Image (cartoon, rainbow, N blue to C red; front, side, top):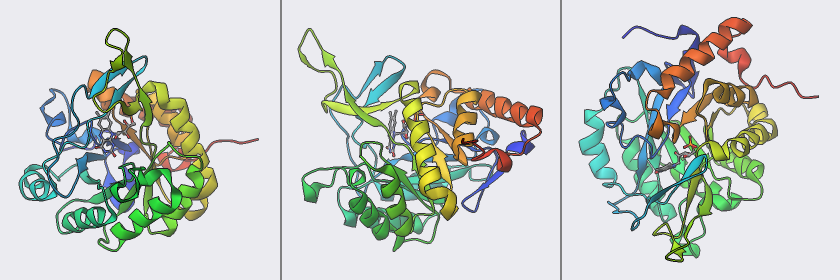
Length: 312
Ligand SMILES: Cc1cc2nc3c(=O)[nH]c(=O)nc-3n(C[C@H](O)[C@H](O)[C@H](O)COP(=O)(O)O)c2cc1C
């Protein structure tokens, strides 16, 4: 298919992207859901992140699993997925790799599970592997791996041993020092970072006086978290990625071309779209058009725009 936005073509982590847009994990199933939307074209995105995948199939949390909030949503899906063997054997062969890059999203309850899922994807046509380090560590009291920098790095180390494919670590904002976490993950072998995953929140049904979500707490996403996500991208880019040349997939509440431009200027090399797809499945077209027009009007290239924030 013809290239629609030549100025948006970008090489991310050794992969050719048609656009800096990445469809985010958990928001497009295993890549088959978005293709059914009339008017959607594979050329509108650079890559698609598949739903979080574990060693064996998981049914996920009990309902409710999603809840709309002002300017966002809470989700506690609980990693419902058919298990890595099913994904590799049944789903990957049905995906169209001609225009789009596909990124696996690896999840686990133990270091061994992360390593096992990564090894299985390594032996598959998947283009890259994203590590979702926000999963609870069952061997250490259920604290999310990604909340503690040293624990995050151990996950990256375990996955790095299993693959030479590009490895992207998805950082959690639910921690005190995201820059230190980023640094340790890069030292452990991460080729790129995704910044940020959801922020933990809850909602209460005041009539039943019970938590709305079956899991009590869930991840907050959407425009409500955008200013926080932008700050984290800025901090991680300035604090560590700029000097190490490590690219970032900026994400968290991006819904417009202006949002996307803010993340690119802050230092993201690609931009993730998740929650916005639930209410506007064709939002990527608008973002591509807006970013492309901006570049033209400012006589800039994507390369020059990325990380061009003026400080001081
Ligand atoms: C319904 C739902 C399911 C998600 N599932 C996953 C997942 O399986 N793995 C993961 O790393 N992130 C998951 N996420 C987080 C998103 O990939 C993304 O990082 C986050 O929602 C922030 O971007 P957004 O505000 O554009 O949605 C999920 C988000 C939502 C809304």
